[in-house]
Length: 400
Image (cartoon, rainbow, N blue to C red):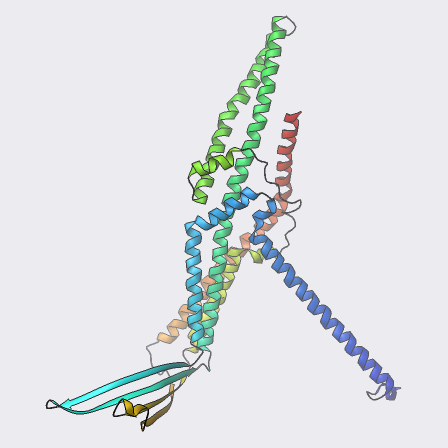
């Protein structure tokens, strides 16, 4: 029976071929699952980056765009990101050899008489062999810092967009409440007039007339407070977008619907949304940068190897550089070993380790409330949608 399962037997070859097909299918499905998760994560990141567009309100999108363009905090974060990326490129350049060109002209004299001239041109090249990973760790730290700056920029943008959206929704909500109050006030005034007529005709009591008057006055007292809230929301939007309040008066004067998100928007985000939060990503990248700085400081205690070479031409006349010049070449290999530095290198390692501990604490502080907020969002998501439905029902009842 075992002889039939040998690789060279027909049955053994069939079994081996089937095993390869099954293995290929498993690998393909695994890659497909990974690609699917990667695509889902990217789609989620894009959806969160422009979450306000899911309200399908063009004016809200315009206000958010204006605020992100005019806000000074966003501009400062963008400048910090450009700086971090430039420093990352500086760290990347340290991994490559350097090549410099040099030229010199020398004129000598003694006793007021010329003793000769000398002209030189050449190339100088040097390369630091990053055997213990000092430069690679510096590059990793700079790259993580650049990603943290990008995440911090996203955090500022999310905060500004949230403030704009909140002020805008408060404005539309106040306008809806004002419309409801106006409708109720008109209806209550009609009821009050009818009650007074009935009182004059002796068909009702003065108590009913007083109750109708009280309801009318209570509703009338709400109108100024709602109008004040509308004015405050308009001013807040003007400040956030960097525009004079008069410029937004026309655009926001017309009563618009309260922005309604897609059904189930609050409850549709998976737990992976926590890692998509800009503040969490910034804290995570800051911790990676601190880890790379620890590795860089530790590798700086190891020997440093460097290779340098020079190649040039030496002549007594300028024309001689192209005809008959002497070729000068130098090749140098050097190693530097730290022997005594007064404990500086060890202290740098301890300092970077302390910075890593701080980054770890900051990361925990960013993640822990995020988990609680995520659970709170799941609990209050239905309440938020229920509150929007109440406003809709009130407007419908007022219309009747």
